[in-house]
Length: 320
Image (cartoon, rainbow, N blue to C red; front, side, top):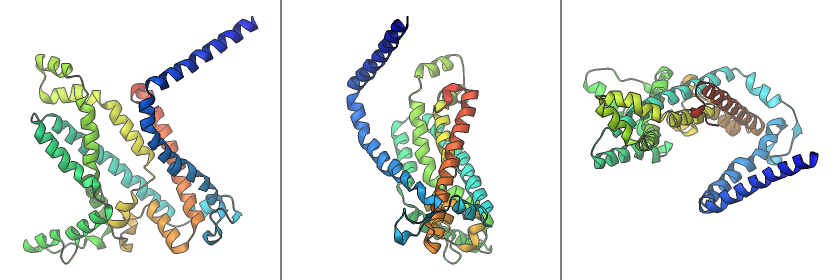
């Protein structure tokens, strides 16, 4: 009996190996195309993981990154016991949550509007115009933002002065900046996500729209009943991926757009900029590594929890 069971298990394992080999042979060109991306991910994402040990050492960069004595969780304690920990953690979560919601609403709305256009040349034109800001660096966007918000020569303040109003000191009042950063982030990233959602919309079976049109459904009704439910798995995946990076603020956005203005730190300082200043001013590589590990761990947990909740609601929309 035991021999029969062993032979059955070996037979199943052999079939699985044959299926894997057959799958690889059938799609070997596709696997080879992914090889450069896999190598890049391995080099820049997996090899640097050895640097995690820096978070648990009293590291002196002049003596080497893996030097120093083991200090346990002291680097984490130094961060969490500081007066800035609660503020920058709140700013990171709040602003990134604001970005996720605003980008989702705006980019999805733009994709739905693009889908309603009948002339393809108009669609391509709008796509190019909306996608172009994504290629601009944050340095350029920071200077463009300053050109609009400068007190003396800013475009907005010149308009206000021409209308007989007092100029607004944008770089002196931190309360304006959640709104400003959200607008700037939308201008740069909404077009990128719009293209992704529009690509998903174009893959929907057109017979569904034709059947709904015959039944008398309006364009808005087709949009609500067919388009959005059909791309809901894509929306779920994109949102889950963004939730995983909610503790990773876009460093360029928070560093170059507010121009590292100290008075704005109460609303613009996030974990990434705080860690950068700790590394640049104090040279504390241990604390910077601890903050990076904390960000990665929380992001990992958030992805797992969000995916679990999504799977409970609708398993088809889950990431894994």
